[in-house]
Image 1 (tube, rainbow, N blue to C red):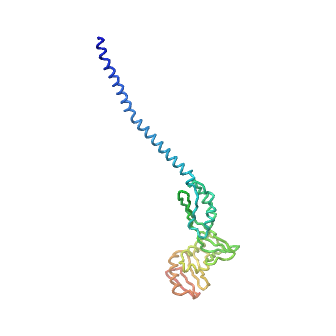
Image 2 (image 1 turned 30 degrees about the vertical axis):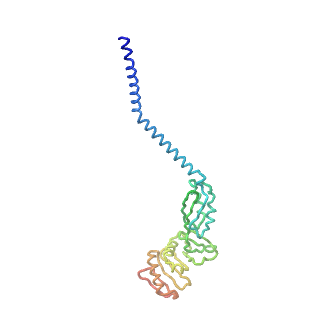
Image 3 (image 1 turned 180 degrees about the vertical axis):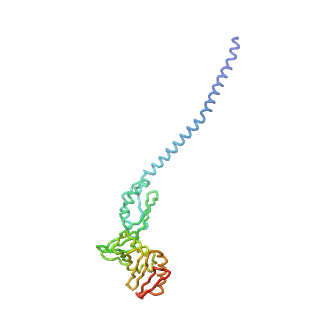
Length: 263
């Protein structure tokens, strides 16, 4: 081969080499495209998780979202100020880190609180919605009288009876007895017009509930707590027809066949 021919082929060889290298780079990029795409996806996911972690950390630990105000709603017999004082030990705590177990224990010390619901109002307020226990009657004790709710929880104690609350007598049985449960079922079923006139509610079993109305002039034989709603309606109609001054005994133990006797 002549020197002239070798010189003329040299540019072609270089061009072919360059094309070969370009081809190889394209092939490498083509085969690694999927792995690069996955890598970008993982990097984006890590960035998102990191951002969320920072936001969560700010929400949990930031003093901007710490408890500064406690509002009590629904408390009438219990002082809202006393409730706030009992639970204000968590003031300054981030809302996300409030100890609700401790809150339940603190509010459980109030016998008049039957239940409660908490509501967090960002950025710094805790609202406590209170449901108070309602008295259903009083029970004689060795030291006086205890006012109880339908569950038998003692709400208050005093040496004398509380006015306007009926006395429950159940033959010395406890508030966990069927006699107490029967009396309570009857009392809560009475319309307001009759319930406010009950002086004594008595029973020794679940089937012999009796009521003595204020003044002792009228009595009610109720029987069991079954059909109490119907019995209450029948009794209300009988008392409306007979008036409240006559000394009578109303027997509604069989509500479809009520009996009125001289007291």
